[in-house]
Each structure stands twice: as structure tokens, then as C-alpha cells.
Image: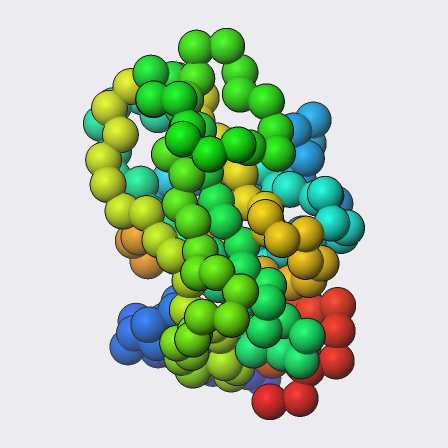
Length: 209
């Protein structure tokens, strides 16, 4: 009986994933600050689509994600913000940081490693209209955000930095990767984290929707 129930649950999650929710990324929570000394390390390849439910703890906080490139690869990055009271002006930027990229045209809140450049992807300005969408996987609304989708060619260690240039504190979702890939461990992760997301346990504010 226990195996039957588990099989039904796993089957339901697989159906939810394979039928395409439009947001079926493997979920991760930021329990420990993703700093330069403790970045989020992408271990299964930058192609796999993941959603990191993170937050800016203070006005100067920025989060760091790290991945390896060994051959030309498509890189997709996106920043999203839950539609919650007080998050109207939470507008994360992000920067793709890698070897042989050009020097950024805007000032960054962090120093680049020697030999590295950055592509900065800006968000809207405060007060501009923001589009929203409903995400059925976690059953909530999000502000649409900027994205990057292109190939990179230089091998080495690459980074993505997320921050809010206006110093707004709050929750955001860092999306990395474009391809929905789910092995057994990912399905178990989805089984554990999806109910938490549906109950707003990834958030640091009250968020009636």
C-alpha cells in the first residue's frame, strides 16, 4: 500500500512535469547566503532548468551562482519576483560573468576576477508597468523579468550575479537553464519542495494572492 501511494504521488508529479506547466524547473531554496565565498554551484550542467528561490537579505546583498563551461553551450538566465505586497519596486538585475567577456558599461556592486568581463542584464526602472504571469507549478503569480539567452564559447568557470540596484530587500527567483531534465533525485526534490512553495514557505513576507 505504501509503495502504491508513493507511486501515485510520483506519477502525478511526472505528469505535471511532462505535460508542461511552463515553469517546471527543478526547485532549490537559498538556506545559506550565496556569496562569493559560498556560491550556488550548478552541478548537473547549465542546460538543466532550475529555479532557485532566493532573497536579498539587506540593501547591499548580491547572490552568486557558479557553473563550468567545457565546450560551447547555450546559457539561459532569468530573474522573477513574486507578486507580493512591498515587492512592486523589487527589480533584480543580473550579470553573466565569464572569461574574455567585455568590460561592463555600468558600475557593478562587486569586483570582477582578473581576465573576466560581464554582460549586465538590466530590469525595468521603478514605476514602469510590469507584466505578470501565473505559474501553476507553485500556484502563484510572478512579475515577469529580464532574461539572457545565448551561447558562450570560452571554457572555464563562469558566474551569474543577482542584485537589486535600488537596494530593495526581498524574495526573487533565479532561473538558470532552458531544458527540463528530471532524474529520480530531481523528482524527489520536486515532491519535497513543491508543497512548501505552494504554502509560501520560500518567502520572507506575507503574500496573499
